[in-house]
Length: 288
Length: 280
Image 1: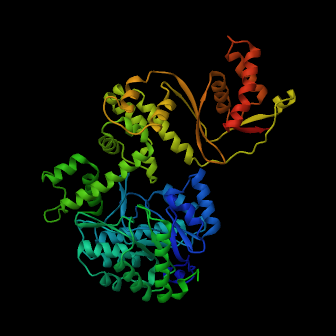
Image 2: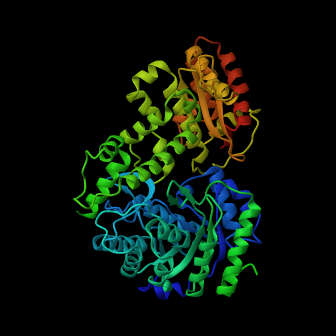
Image 3: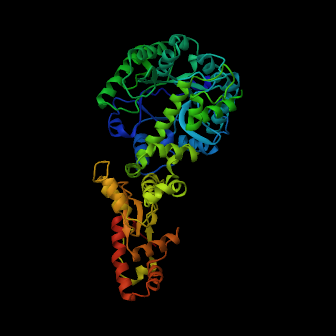
C-alpha cells in the first residue's frame, strides 16, 4: 500500500455485481457462477473455524473472488483495538487474498464486552479524531485497503455536532480510507431522520467509494429498520443509479440476511442491479 | 462528555435491564441536560441487542430452551452477568453451562441435569466448528504381533470426552423426537420428572468427511483406552503399550478377556471415526 488511498484505489480490481455468501443460500449461490461475479463474506463466521464452514469457504474461493465485510472490528470503540481480531483478520485476508476489507462506522464493544450490534457514534470532532487514528492503525496492521460503511442508526447520539455525511466525509478523509456506501442505509436514515438522501450523496467524497451495498428494510412501529430481510425498493435502486452515475466504483453487492425468498427472486434483483450498473458504469458488468 | 463516557453510558442503558427501566421511568440521568437521548430509541437498541442474544442462545441450546420455562429472562440475566468478551458471536454462549451450575441453584435443583445438557449442546457446536488439521493415517488390520509394536492409533483430533451423571443423549433424543409442549403431561415435564441419574461416558467428535457431529457412548474398557490415548497426545501409545496399560486397570477381569474386548472395540471405534486409523 502507498501513502494515498485514492492512488491505491486505481489499481483495485473491478469485481462487478456480487452477493453475500450465506449458509442458508450457499448451495444455490455457489451454483450460479454465471450470474454472480463475486462474493462478500462475514469474516467472523469463518475466521479460525473448520468443518463444513471451512469447506464452504474453500468452495467459494475456488469459484469467486472474495472480499470480507466484518461486524466486530468495533472501530469506534474507545477500547484498545483488539490485536486478536485484527491479527486474525490479516491472516484471514491473506488466506483468501481479498483486494480490500470493510467494516462499519460504529462501535460494537466497550469496556471489554461486545454487544454484537452496529451501534451509532456521536458525530463529533472527538469521534472523527479517534476513528481516523484507529482506522490508520488497523489498515497498517492488515496491509490492505480498508473501506468504511455508513450504518443505519435509529437515534441521535449525545455530543453529535455535525451531519452524518460531514462525519463520514471527515473520518474517511482523515483516515485516508475508502467508503463502502450502503444506499439502503442512506435511504433508511433519510426517512428516520428526515433529510434528503441526495444531499448526503452530493456531500461525500465519491472518489473514495469502492463498493456499494444494496438491501431491503422493514418497518417496525414508526421506524424503518435495516433488516436485509425484504426486497429492495425503487427509491433505493434510484439512489444506486445516482451514485453509479457520479462515481467509479469497483463492486456492487446485494445483501440478504434473513427471510430468504426463492433464490430466483434474488437473481432477479441482481439482474436489476446489473442493468443499472451496465447503463451507469459499463465496466461493472462482468458477466456480460 | 467524552466519547468514552458516551459509549459507556449507552452500553449501560442498552445492556442492563434495571438501568434501562430506571432511565425509561425518568429516574436515571446519565447525560447532560438537553443531551438525553430519546427513550424510545434507547429501548429500541436495547431490544435489538436482546433479540440477537436470545436468537443466538435459542439456536445453540434448543433442548435447554424446551425445558426452561422463562428462557428469555434467563438469557438476559446470563448476558448481563457474563457479558460477551469475544468478537465471535457464538462465543457469547460458551459459559452457559457453568453459569447454570454456579448461578442458578434453584433451577438446577428442579432440573439437575441442565448444566450437563447445556454442556452437551455447546460441545455439539464447538466440535462442529473446530479448526483442526486431520492427521495422516493408514488403515491396517492388526493381524500380526509386529504391527502391535510398530503402529499407534490416530485419535480424531476433534474429540472431546465427557463423563455425565445423567443420560444426556437419551434426553436430547426424546426432545428431538417430540414437538414442544407445555403443561403437566408434556414431554418436557415428563423428562424433568422422570430422568434419573445414570452415569455415561460420551465421546463427541466430528466425522472428517461429512462433518457430522457424533455422540458415541463408551463402555468402561473403551473409555479407559481412549483416555490413555488422549493423555499421551500428540503421540499415541502403540497398540502394544495400550494393551499393557489397559490389562492391569481391569485386574478383576481375566487378561485374555480384556485383550479380546479391546481388539473387538478398536476396529469399531475406527469404523465410527473416533479413531481415524493407525500410524507408525
